[in-house]
Length: 222
Image 1 (cartoon, rainbow, N blue to C red):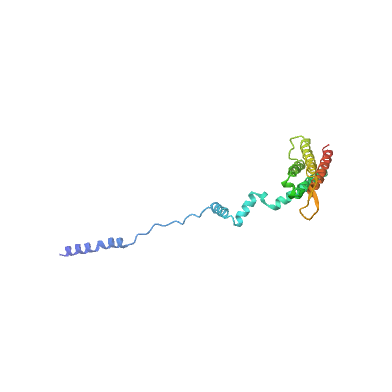
Image 2: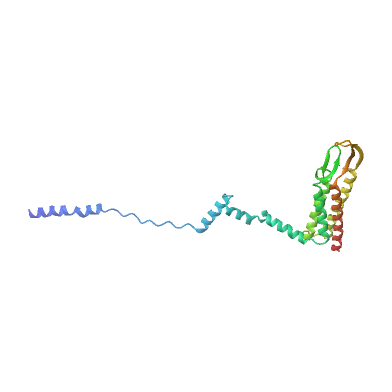
């Protein structure tokens, strides 16, 4: 009897540790902290966000570094340096051609029927084109852009454009002169049917100055 009682006592004590083992909670595996993002990717994201927003200050700075020619101050400084580089005959020829260009925004002809005609909307436009070409060739010579060609070729092109500018202004002066008297639209007086205006005379003056400046540039080439 004593042996049976001992066996029953051992059987009751044996499942206690198993139950204790089952009741113990299982530990979760340790989690590692996420690795920090690279600094370069964050910078690229900032640049991309700045480029996406055209109104941001960073986007304007990026655009200004990529295309500095768009800055008006750079263009003005370049123009000032170019005008300072002009010497002697080149400066005279350049400003003579500039006077022709300016005169084309003034009346070149006055008619009794239609009134004033600007040089840009009349045959004076031809003088405008050749005056601009004269300024371009002066710039090429002053900056020495066409160094691979004979220096006389740009000068010859400049002189040709200057002479054509002057000659065409004189031709326009002749074509716009019509001394036939017609009734004036204002009052009871009479006026010429067509006559040159101040713009034509300024174009002739500018053409003469441009030709003289080109001749002075020839002495410099020699």
